[in-house]
Every structure is written in C-alpha cells, then in structure tokens.
Length: 222
Ligand SMILES: CSCCC(=O)C(=O)COP(=O)(O)O
Ligand SMILES: [Zn+2]
Image (cartoon, rainbow, N blue to C red):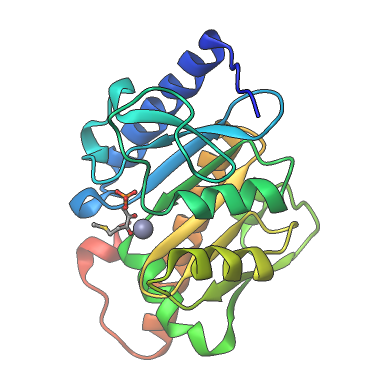
C-alpha cells in the first residue's frame, strides 16, 4: 500500500496535537509522561499522527509526533517510536469511521471512577447538563460509559475496547488507567474529554458527600 499524505495536512495534525496537549497540560492531565493523543490525516487508507512513546506531553512539540498506518507502523522516516498504546487509537478509528481525533489522559478522577464502577462494567451519568457537550440533547439524558480491565497486553486491550465501545458514547474507561475519548475532530474530542472529566469529578464528590465524607476544601471549590 502506498501512503502519499499531504504535508500541509501533516502540519495541521501535528499543530493540532501540540495545541490540545497544551490545554490538557495546563490542567495537570499528563502526570509522569502518561497519556497519548492522535489526529487522523485526511483521505484513505487510514493514517494518523500520534504522540511518540515516553515523551513529556506537558512540553509536547511538533517534533514529538509521527505518522502511522492502521497497523500502528510508522509511514515516514523517523527515529521516534509510536505510543505504546497506538493500537487503541487504530482500533477506535476502525470501529468509529467518523472519529477524526482520539485523546487519552490519566487523571485522578477518571481512575477513581473506573475502579469504583468496574464490577458493573460501566458508569452511568444522568441529568447532568454537560451531557449536551456529547451532542445528546434530550432532557434528563442518561449515558453509560463502558469500563474495561487494564490488560498489559495492548492488542488484547485494544480488542476489548473495540468490543465494548458504544458508537453513541465517545469514550471508554480503562480500570485504574485512564480514559480514551474521541470526536469528529480534535475540537470535539477535546470537548468530550473535558466534559467527561468534569462529570467524573462531580460524580466522585457527590458520592463522597452521600457517604458522609468530609470533602477537602480545595476539592469542594473545584
Ligand atoms: C507512564 S504512563 C504508562 C504508559 C501509559 O499508560 C501512557 O499513557 C503513556 O504511554 P506512551 O507510550 O504513549 O508514552
Ligand atoms: Zn495510558
């Protein structure tokens, strides 16, 4: 298969990744080099720009991005190694053809929620205004975000994510690991990550209050 992607498109993708990384880094969403990000290049066959493995995403530059194919193999000359979790991005793009960007962050609240609700296989959110950020507009809407085990075997983890994902819900949680969320473009994917993170913070604090916990002032002020 010949890959002849447009260099202007490549620049768009690399810059888009740097911009979204800056936004998430300001929120502290890339602890200890965790997280990875991708944006699809235009056209067929599947090719996407993805962050290189082990880079400090808090200081991401366009030199930390490489272009890979649907098998997660680099399709340009590079010394960079694609993210260890690139297969998950490829799986999302194969299962959700309309997805144009896929973003992964490890945060405290997505980890807590993924563990608390793991046995149920999903976490339900209902009646929260930010559900509308997912383009779901019905009154008192309820959504369920699937949760999968954190397999060390990445092909197995990617396949499991592909099996459980619900095309109506643009995210999957990995137990005690983080969230993968996607959207038609990087703007939508970023909005989805931000909405889920806010709702997980909300849910955790609400559960804590209901169970009689005294919530630290700095968290209560979020
Ligand atoms: C230090 S975090 C462990 C790996 C991980 O889960 C992650 O998101 C970052 O991996 P990458 O290869 O994309 O740097
Ligand atoms: Zn990760």
